[in-house]
Image (cartoon, rainbow, N blue to C red; front, side, top):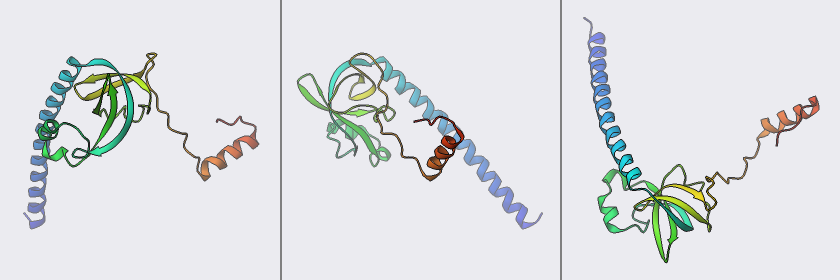
Length: 160
């Protein structure tokens, strides 16, 4: 066999070993995530809270209790978390929010939130409706404006 085929076989063997290792690591992480999601669902309760402020902050700057910061793994300490400052009853609390609903939570309004400890899992308005995104519509680019003009000239109704 030539040197090139030997090198390619060695690289192929290393890649196969890496894929097998990643598969088993992924299975283990998926199992941990399923267990933690079951724990969150088990301890979830509905709370009325007034949202004061929301930001994405680093863990050290978030104002969370020191016990939470200490129990966080080292690799998760560098990233930014969605933090919601809310008034729950008479006290003001900093809470970690789910990434998927962070953008939909309105500021300076009272909402009903599904909370598990200091983690906000879900939120809805006081009337029971699910929150939807309140982002302003995106500006159309040159191509979108041109297509709108052409459709109007052709007699089609503009979609706005």
